[in-house]
Image (tube, rainbow, N blue to C red; front, side, top):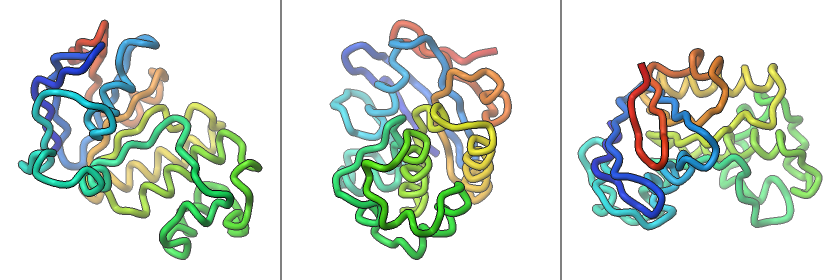
Length: 197
């Protein structure tokens, strides 16, 4: 279980929330309310005060890269640091089934990153994260650039991740998607969180 207690950073908090194993909690709220700030703070990408733990182990008890592998943030626009798609994967053979299931051809490994559309980058970013086997996914509008068919595949993959015991915090503006994927909704307003009815 992910626990967040009294999380505070500029523009956000104090916040408390928890995500159980196998659960998806949707994060809603107007643009600029702090949804992405929340995910980035939980992932330890931005400085924040408060206690964050996974299965009882505090974030401060492990090195930042180890925490970020277990509690993995998937940005709306994933980062790219090398020239080709394959260069961003530590194990392309293991990633390939995910990549093809997400609708990309096997030979996209050799594509230059500059060739990728927004939706292709989003799908590859999710595949890159899932192949590292995190315990918790922090998804920041992962389907914003996708059509309905690709969105459905992403939702299926995340459902399978949950069925294997993974937890999910999923930021989405889409009320229909929240209804499909989440068991609870947390609304962020002016940096504060409240459970939605």
